[in-house]
Length: 158
Image (cartoon, rainbow, N blue to C red; front, side, top):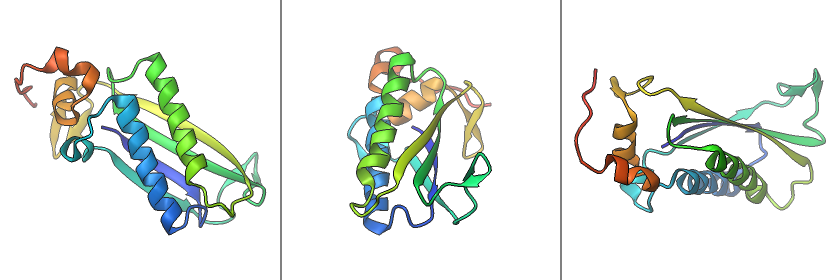
């Protein structure tokens, strides 16, 4: 149930490549967070791709986008969903998504920066209501948390 804010250089992932990237990012989230193959559960995986204008992305004060393809992923997930192994797998899957979605004509070296932010319990709100891990577990259907939160009880929202 991530919110993914993705930044890529403008034009790096044109239409078909962009659609492939979004699909692969959603698959990466579902795999790492153990979200079942259910459209109602996967609806909660949000991806926003922002394109950065030429010259607006620098590394060490230099525009490197002629030779490098910097891609940034900031991914928010509820605290308690990931552990060390799933964080590592998530980062690997997101990097692979960037790599595999590239158009075949792209020759620049891909470099990624992937940040997995775990949002503290009670610090995420949806539609004006504070959500807690049991709420997220029921909504997204996290496979590894279903035994813990399968009671069906609704958590009280503040």
